[in-house]
Length: 142
Image (cartoon, rainbow, N blue to C red; front, side):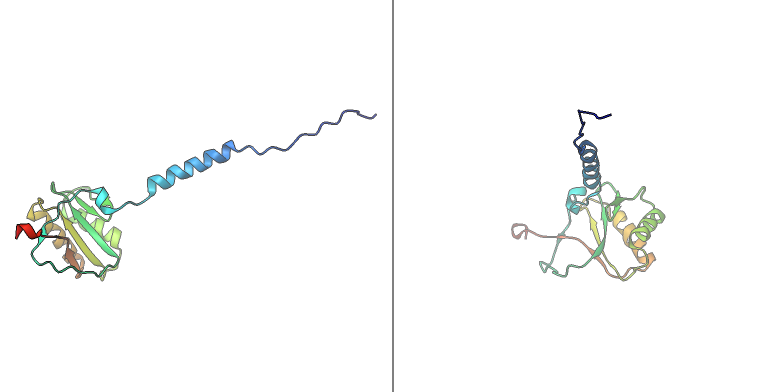
């Protein structure tokens, strides 16, 4: 028996699942992207008395302290202001590298105790290259 009509199906590529996967990946990358540090937390840094600026840029651990006493290690907020919790957060981010430079960025309105707590935690862990971030004083204020 011979069929007079032959059916040819044209192969199709369904792109809708591909578009769904691409959109999910795009959302994932947008959610996990790192942004500039200044956009995470607005700090008003204290002014420096000397206008000499260091130009040495190297990979450093950043500990930020807000005016209300919240601590951030890297880009992660520390749950509470206890020194044990702060030490654990620093160890988790820095690992075993105690030669790493550390930048303490404290808000100018932060209590002195918060800065001392951060410096104490870093000292207890054995960090020796610790810097405190400041901004240049305006020429008008001198």
